[in-house]
Length: 137
Image (cartoon, rainbow, N blue to C red):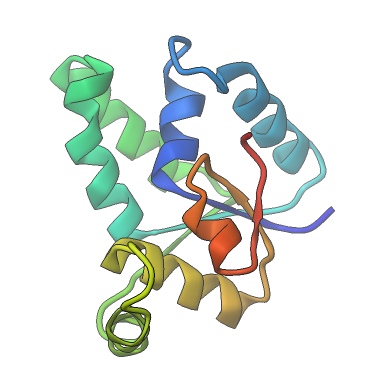
């Protein structure tokens, strides 16, 4: 069992019982935490998640609570993108004009590469395009 990256859609699946992969996401989160491993995400992913909260219909106090819980979890690593990873993420985004990857995706791919992570709690097929393992499908 290794550490796992959590993308925006992975957070959404974990948070909302209405999401199609909710039970699977909860099981993967529990598996990682029970094994004493780390969940890894980025500041970009958390910013994107706050934009998604409206679609999830979370009341504002619950939104704040979710972000506070994520940041307080001892087995969670929130990687800041600026300034260390942003130039490489922007460079990847520029170079892959054949892909519909966002800058958030590219930052995630760069972080995963640097941390030698291969598995992502995500429903986003872009992770598979980047040669990574998408766990929520």
